[in-house]
Length: 353
Image: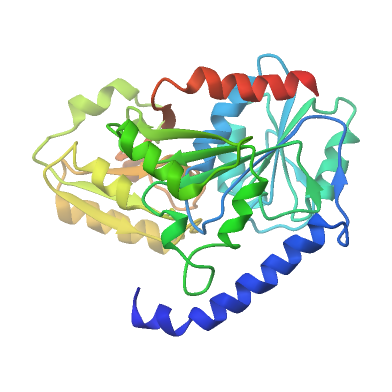
């Protein structure tokens, strides 16, 4: 731990005490909780920053949508609006946030809503002419005014909570005891060659309760997709000179795994990092274009799917720049052949409720 974080430890203890008292008030009923008569699944984490909730949420959408009318309810972090909004075909990411926009872009029939107050968002969804049958609450683990019927907690393999502290000295949103509210725990971003003995050690450290099932997943990077829809996804290999630079551009919580992945496309990777949910500007585009020119005509940009949503909506994007930007979709890969069990846990809950 750095000296600065060490100095912040007393504030972390205070923060942990306050959040523990808040959780206790919810547990004892002193703070009101609303529960609904349809399946409500919460996907969240204990750690600030990216743990991989979005690919897990997408997995749940793919799993449940063929059978149920699903809706996603998110806070809409980074959006420039307030209150409850339900996305339509004309909604832009600045109205609902990049992650909800990514969901709406991928799953056209999915109902996507945003609301800082999840109770208000749920009420709006249920008041629709055709209300959803299943609601997925994204990033809602600490939003306890709604009691989910099922809770999925996502953790980052490379940032174990037993080595962390609460804010501001660490990255935990609440004390580690908050793990007890989860029904399923997903250790995400694991190396694909994770051994059973390593998995057992993680389980020993976490000490899950008897009712809690533990799963291990890795991030699977898919083939690059062009930002310019006039290009074919198959063209990437023919356009790319393996000796030409790749500019790896990311505005996400933890870009290091993405930068590492980009190295498989080129021996020279130029990383460019922005804050999470960064709103790109025309000046950003100009700087990116200058970097492309500097690195030569054969260079290309690789970015994340979430960044592609924001880049494509930025005014001032030239056709030339757009034609040289490719994004990498990601999916979850369940380790130890555990996906059937995970899927059954989710579908059993949805079916019974």
